[in-house]
Length: 295
Ligand code: CAA
Ligand code: NAD
Figure 1 (cartoon, rainbow, N blue to C red):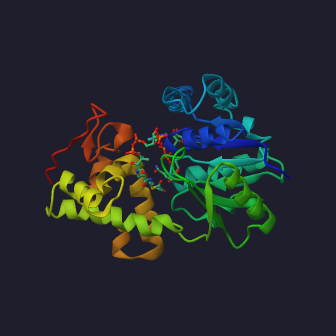
Figure 2 (figure 1 turned 45 degrees about the vertical axis):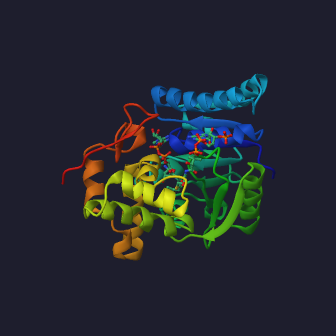
């Protein structure tokens, strides 16, 4: 069965990017949010990104309108019922994801493929909330989705090979490079990336260097496109905190333990760029200022 209609759950940082990418690749897309306001915000992000492409001349205005026309926003989960694949990109917490998939499972035909964009939760555990573990897998995109070329395609011990191969091919049709991996928390990229990001917070927490100097060190010394503290703000400190907790729970290694400073920042509501404040203040988003930290 060829995938034609794509459902996306969540229109935040990742869901909006996944919906945009699928629509640009020619798929019909339904994206579901929990409130009209959040849906409006997510769709506005897609429109803004497409407009940027028009301004740069890499997309014609009629094409932008056609892409936007392929994206339907909704707050009703029932609208996902006739999608060939549903990609879940909601908050990185087990219970909301389980509730979402259990409800979706009752609405969709057995043939539909369910995929989670989770960064760290167990795909097997999520699949157990449904009656289709054979058509359940991980499809892990990277932020910003329209730009980053990689997708990790994650299979569990129960994933059917035909459904897996179909999803690998689908990732290719999105213009991404799929890599194959199994269901261990963090898959490939976060297994390597998360300890590095947490170490950067520990370096700051230990008073070894300033926010800007830590970021410049990795940018200018190692050629990374963003310093680790800028990247943490970009990913979301809340999301990183959830990921670190899940990874620590699985591996029980100190390198995955969330540093106290990260926890305090999340408790204070400092979620990074999306909330306006993290390691940097984004009052002027084009010119972020390091936040002086006293702890
Ligand atoms: N959405 C869509 N497109 C965007 C974008 C966004 N949020 N931000 C930038 N872009 C596009 C720009 O339009 C531009 O496109 P063109 O090349 O066609 O002109 C291109 O990206 C480069 O942008 P800029 O010139 O403005 O800025 P830059 O050169 O600094 O690149 C970046 C921006 C691509 C984000 C780059 O800084 C980068 O690669 N950063 C690292 C990102 C990263 O590591 N992502 C992975 C995070 S971990 C993860 O996602 C997994 C997890 O589970 C947590
Ligand atoms: P986000 O907070 O920006 O967006 C999540 C959105 O999901 C919110 O807008 C929320 O209202 C919505 N939502 C919550 N419950 C919902 C439901 N039942 N149905 C529909 N929408 C619902 O978070 P994000 O950064 O986009 O992360 C989403 C997922 O993607 C997480 O699992 C995260 O680990 C993963 N991920 C994040 C990144 C990243 O860099 N931020 C990268 C790769 C994967």
